[in-house]
Image (cartoon, rainbow, N blue to C red; front, side, top):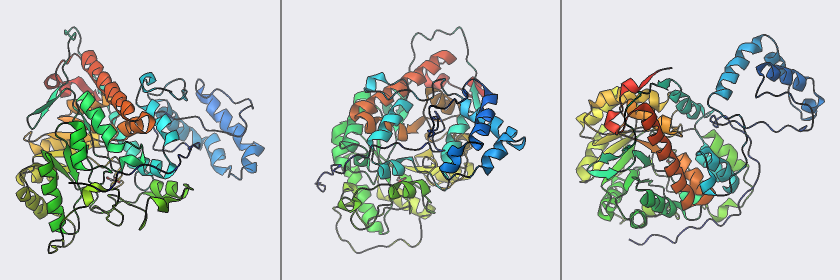
Length: 475
Ligand code: GLV
């Protein structure tokens, strides 16, 4: 099926410094102060010096000149601030490097971890699009919770096991992949790089990873399957008219997708403040690309079709007698979906034992434990915390894929130890895409796989089935 013309990112890239946000928990950057040449205490090596530094700042004319309120600084420098600062120190120093702001990498091959791509992508991606990528809900607290959840678990490596060969391969519905890391659906990829989903699909092909395409992708399912040269799963947002949703599902099946993942975590809506704030900072003429209103993909829990010129999976359907949905989907919708297709039907966004058990009752074929990368409700509950109860609810009868904040091989390992079949990544590969296109996506996949396999070796587990709850312990 021919889609609309391919969208090319035509707006000029905004190259501006982007302030540190609380969603960026993994490697904080030092703040930029208008007095770089002043004698600033060494906060990285001396915890007391942070207080001295705050006291210095509170008394500094720089703050007043910048129109900033010094009350909160005085609180922090007083005794009440100690507990706060200690907590902040613990968060700020947990797992971060001594050098907090490494230079930007010039080549994908120079990256040491996935965060190296984040810094480059942030420079390359227009600020409104960056806001769309990085947003959570409300204060973005669930993004931070997803990351912090991994620290609730520690590793318990076993020794003296022959780990010279390690096999991290996984089988999903009969297809085998060398790594359990899934390229999760993430919409509008041409907003991050002109090659968009095609670059991602080619990278998934080169590294042989399962890819799941978003309903709100800027490339058609047909073109992505061709670029992946192999099956790609489809993430489904329903439309207000069942006859259109059904045609979409049938089209995806005809295109060769073996599975759909119906997203159920946005049905109540989603309050994306960071996205809106960052869009306001974008000074480009957005009407060139976004006629008919600012796009809010996924926010309403179904496809926003005000402007789908660049969303080829949303166009080309016959005008059949409408069958409008009454209300938002319930388990009845899941039954209908199952009846409408021969594909495997997974639910994406399940976080409780009760819903996992209901999903099995309704014949669902698999689950994604997901809070939409912290962009659904602001639950502040990490998916790694929800994972064990979801696995329990399934009784081990269907595969469980966990996503939400996976950045390190150790994160993947912990999820596997808690019963995940696979894990999904989103933002990290988009950082790779925004930084270096296909090459960047490939490098992100390679780094995460390498880190995971290293953790397997270090832990004395040479296959996924050997990874067990005995390899981890609560922190
Ligand atoms: C789409 O899936 C979104 O989260 O915006």
